[in-house]
Image 1 (spheres, rainbow, N blue to C red):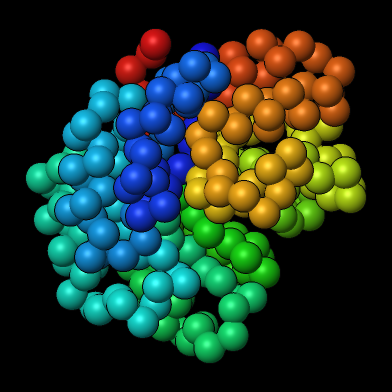
Image 2 (image 1 turned 135 degrees about the vertical axis):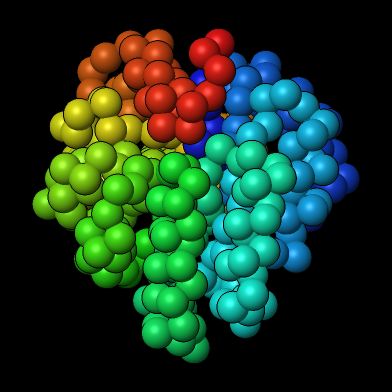
Length: 255
């Protein structure tokens, strides 16, 4: 069995066939998904989607790419949602220094605020870190007492080691399936399995086999198989290790 540690299953792209997508995921062995939010306006809909199936686990947060939608009072609202809804994580939160026009200082304020909320409630954080891994590491060190995952990791081996040293995991998905992703594939080949989570980031980041198409949680099996091939181990070993990691980090019921 597999856990998709990062699936935007509440996204509008799945509104027309969400039940069928879920069935395909289960047929591929993906029995559980962590579903992170992007903005306060999406929290109610995400909650309702997750209530439809026991294998869907919500996380609530404020994504840096949706900065224009965030307001300071949303951090207080986040606390209220956590107290009422009991999510498995805070997220998706983080920093994005790739997209033009996203104010870095404002991103940092919302990210730091969410890290403090996560520490307050003892929840892991699901972190977006595009061209911003060093800044993310610095923020985690400032706040302290945190656990979590940097999803769609694209940093260096040294940055990965720093994250592991702070108890953070890294998430790998579709990008690792591309043959030219040499640095990422080298990391997948050699990193300790205890710090690895699998993800799709569906409907985004399709793997090499469906380039340019809508991604789905069922494609997690492709990510698993590629990483197993890179490490020259059985796919079942990758599945077992990453499932244990997800259960540990997100405190999921052991299947």
